Image 1 (tube, rainbow, N blue to C red):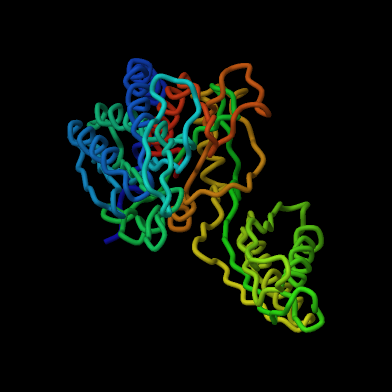
Image 2 (cartoon, rainbow, N blue to C red):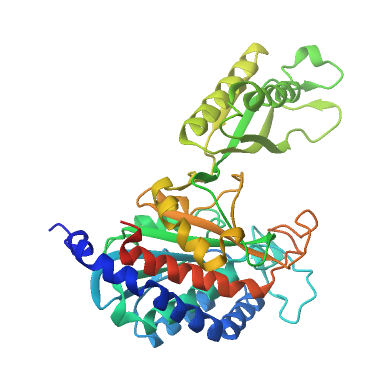
Length: 435
């Protein structure tokens, strides 16, 4: 049966828009009142981080909070994910809001009372665990959003689906996880999601500011493995070998021509990086093979396809020219599509972001070559993913510790803006601005 709510919107839109200023004022007041609660949640999650597909404690706290608000809750989605459904009192679209929950195998160095002391095993080694990308902030912010929207349930023109997602940083080796698995398990169905919003705190963007970009905003990522096979020999007699180390060096150099000579850099950027080389175990033995691991980053599906094809051609043909062979696997173990902000949706919701943060504080940002698995949701439904300032006011972005590092630091005074932004995006889309 086709949905009827678009027809309803034509009659409701005027009244919905008329209520917007008062409704936003209500959200602002509620968000300000919740600030310390959100900060407390974040500090608790920060002190007790969990790696991907193991966010058991975090998920339990989230589920209990949603249940206490009268929200329908499903747990165990994509291993440890939590999904809450808040059905408004009036007909309308289904708006999804997403927060990621996992930490990283990083040992924290930040001198704060709630610094993580957690250790666990990762890839056979004992490691520290840290919320080194701000996912603890995302969870706390969305818990605050849920509390506010649940208190306005009877006035909501539609349904809100709260997605608390595990393993954004990637699942453990040999496991599925993250947004890709959540989509596979039907998180965008029953009820069917019409649009999705998400945010990411940023340690190098000043508190009070929001960054956005229509179209490709974060890169597609493919990891790759290249195995070069030659013929082994004593190091004193290289003419008896087909040296895979020399061949690998040529491949690495030739790969650098892809971005400089094949990518239209006036349109999009891209990255071809070899991050690991393994071959040989002694100075006077030419090995039989060399393994290289690397990453490809692209900001459009067409560029992604081109990068993959060129890497395969260059690696195999360079090896062939030297009498060796090269086996190329792309992706080798993981792939995220381009994080693509639907241009129409972005334009329609930009006034909401400008209203909540102030027009001067909403900045069109450059695309980044980092990746986000929020992109898997955007492949299925229109989505808007934006960046929330987390750097102390007056800070230097070049000196602020970046994400995924032991010194990563977030100013908590920016959380309330995140709560207000997600609430207002939801309410304005339901009010008709997104249609």
